[in-house]
Image (cartoon, rainbow, N blue to C red):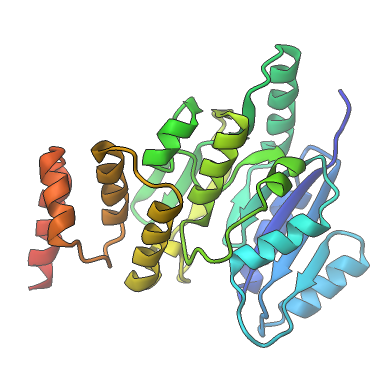
Length: 285
């Protein structure tokens, strides 16, 4: 099998120790032909010195936002895309890490599909192992995800493995999205190229109790704006899609659900979600 180069992009901001763990997990991959690109959003915690040292050793490439003003993760991802030379590309958040078989599993699965003449593949993804204080949980277990499914919910998670050219041809990530950038991007990839297949290895590890902010903790205003932009770009075609997106929004505890949104949940029999929101509201009293 031809060892095509795989680019792994990592965006970071002031999380040096977590970044080191993320980078180390890529360097430890059993697959050998990997290019690492770290996009830093202007860190002030020693990240620049670390990146300089690693780049001088030939272990990674880096791009640094030196404007003094945050440009967001999607700016960094798109910058990494512009620098990438891999045939394939995938991402890693700086507070997560890979199991060492992840990239090799993706490459083998992709070429297996090619040998089977499966041509409508937008990309691959994998289940996530989430580590919390109360145990370990797996997510994103759908075997196959298509465009229609993604219009209702992000069944994939925050990373995919695909061809670099596919990302470039859809113009990368939307830098105007304050959140949900991955969901929006997967919708556009699926619309253009086809389905996403799950390799079912649970090779992506999320540790929730590291004490730093994750997207689930972003300000309510940013989350709501992101859903508004998602709905503007990918208008719900029916009540079911609209309801599914409201359900997804309800997973963010900081969001206050509007009466009109509760009515849609009621009409579509999402009683469990309604009861959960009522319970949370009562807990605040």
